[in-house]
Each structure stands twice: as C-alpha cells, then as structure tokens.
Length: 362
Ligand SMILES: Nc1ncnc2c1ncn2[C@@H]1O[C@H](COP(=O)(O)OP(=O)(O)OP(=O)(O)O)[C@@H](O)[C@H]1O
Image 1 (cartoon, rainbow, N blue to C red):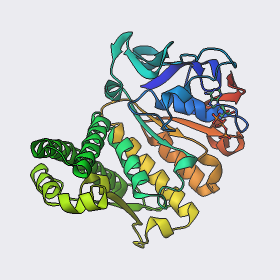
Image 2: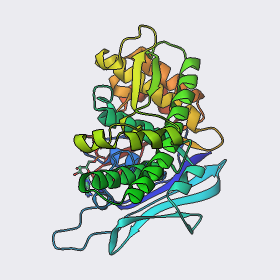
Image 3: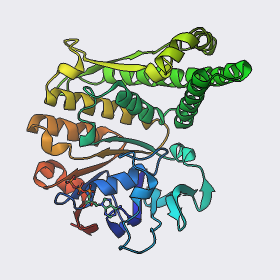
C-alpha cells in the first residue's frame, strides 16, 4: 500500500504540483530552496498534527501577490494497492478561513485525528539534528509527535493538559474559587495521566523495536522515560493539590507530564546522546526514526519522510540505510541536492527533479 497521485495546490512555493505514479523509494532532487522539503511537509500533513515544520496554517498557503487576498491551499493523495485506489485523503483550507484545517477522506469531511487510521507517518529532517542538546520541551514534542502513531487523540490530550495547567496558574496567582481550582486540577490529572501513559507506552515500544535492530552501523540508542511527577491520575491530582503553595511561589506547575524527560544514551557505552559526536547523534536519530516507522506501520500503510539524510552518511551507513528501507514496509520519500548519493537505488526509485516549486519526472 502506498501514496500516489499526489497533488499540491497553492502549498508553499508549489502553485500546482502533481506526482502521479510512485514507487517504494521516491526521490526528490533539486537545488536549495527548490521546494523539496515543502513536498515532504505536504505529505506530513496527511496525518494529524502540524506537519514536519510545526508551521502555522497561515504560513502554509502560497504567499499571494502583494495586495491580493490570502490563498487557500489543498493537498491530496491516494492510497493505492497494486494500482487500485483504496482511499483518497485530502487536507485543505478555504478562502476566508486560512486558520482552519479541513480534512476529507474519500470525499467526506473527517477529523485530522482520523487520518492516523489510514496512514502512519514518520520523518527525520535536518531541523531535528540538535534534538539531544535541545530543551527537554523539544524532546517532549518529538515524543508527542511520534505518539500520534499509537494514540491519535494524544495531541488533543496534550493541549487539554496545557490549557488546564494555564488555568491552574491563573487561579493560583489571582486567587479563586477553591472548588474551581479542584475541578481544574482534576482535569489536569485526567489528561496528564493519559499523556504520561501514552508517552511511557510509546517509549517502551520504541525500545523494543530498537533492541531488535542490529547495533551496527547505526549506533543503537537506549531510551528511558523519566516522568516529571506521579503518572497515575489519583497521585497526580493529590500532588497538584499538595504543591499549590510551591507552584504559586514559582509561578508555574513544577510537577507533572509537562516536566517529563526523554533520556537517550548510546546503548553500547551508556554515553548520553548529548555528548556523542554529531555523526553518532544522527545515527541514533535514524535508528529511532526507523524503529518508529516499524512500530507505526503495524496494521496500516506507512510512509517515511527522510529530508537530506542520505548525503550526510558515509557509504557503509548509506548502503545499510537503503537495505533496511528496502526491507521495510514503509514507502520512502527522500530528498537531496544531487542524485549521486542515491546511485544504489536509482534503478528502483521514482525520481522527480524539483525546481522553483514545480516538478519534472526523471
Ligand atoms: N508560503 C509560501 N509561499 C511561497 N513560497 C514559500 C512559502 N513558504 C516557503 N516558501 C519558499 O519555499 C522555498 C523553500 O522550499 P524548501 O524548504 O522546500 O526547499 P528545499 O528544496 O528543501 O531546499 P534545501 O535544499 O535548501 O533544504 C523558499 O524559497 C521559500 O521562500
């Protein structure tokens, strides 16, 4: 099962781009700024969430000429098996409502969360290179994005938790009805326990997949979930109530999933990922992405988006990456400025040259 018949309308620098027949390996080749990542971003929006750049909807539509009205955008793709279309997925905005993302499945209105039932998406982009040295919040977002593959409502839970904690902060700061504070903490504990459970489950399953992968040539990472507070609803609720004075003084909630940490070390040496070499960090990110791709593909079509990955690997790792990708069930989309690094898969790949927001099939 694979994505094909892909169309982009007024998306980023693509006015009207179509990619018809696809393959297991799909290569987008072109100069810097051509629109390759924009194509991957469009595919990433065929799942729930904000896509691989976490962009605001208003930024996704092609910039209108000065003085013109904002343009609505549309992305569509078919899920096909042996040439037969099994579903048509689409996401778009409408004129006058650039901030509202609409979704259709087989022509009928659907929720963004429901897209996860049709397609599993995993991606790796250069923007993620600093993940291990970045803030704990960036790693939580990384975990939360991957978690959509096992719990499509996870993003709503995270948003609801954050909203409840903001409300709790306001009530602690300005004083308020005690029973309202109780109710808000109950909500935070309800969403918080669900968020913590999903994150813990995701990391366990990723660790499982990772342990099945060979440790070479991609350094195998070991993942540990470090909860930022009690993970059960009752315990979290009690802790929130107990810590009101401390959190009032701190001006924020210091207990709960908003303080969770994903700890990553190199499995063989236990060296923290943040102090590994750039190449080792990239290799661990690739290993996590591949593991996520395997986990996410259980029971549904799956797509891996790898932006600028091949060119940065030495020949041994590149060959191994292609071997694993070839064996995997996920359809693969890769970008590069040149075709040379893809020589080994050229004969089996669908290739497009991307330039100026357009594509030409090679
Ligand atoms: N909303 C938009 N409307 C029109 N053009 C846009 C919009 N958003 C981004 N762009 C343009 O898209 C181009 C970047 O495209 P993209 O990031 O896909 O490049 P790329 O081919 O991946 O390049 P690189 O190899 O440098 O990563 C830039 O020229 C940028 O100005």
